[in-house]
Image (cartoon, rainbow, N blue to C red; front, side):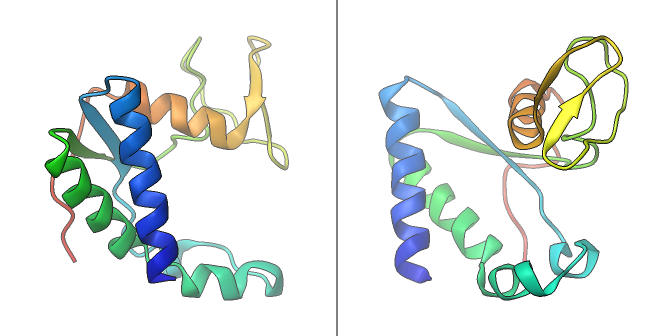
Length: 126
């Protein structure tokens, strides 16, 4: 898993550099294992993924590349419509808003994180 985290973090930082990105925004994922609904299907992958280690790898590689890392509050990032601002729950993996905006739930979260102007720090704490 450590090797995977190194490869993922390298790919993220290289992509940011290639697109001239100066800030990488991440969700501050605290207590994720205790707050996530679990099932037999995802239980193993959830407990083998090191959120903290991946974030710290991204941080140090981004710093070497001159890229800043900011952490945003993960609350409602996959439920707030970027068009009208209303909160809707996604059905399965699809997000459909009353204003007819629709996208994949994970893409919606990425959009909302990237547009977030409120960040809760620039250092991950254990």
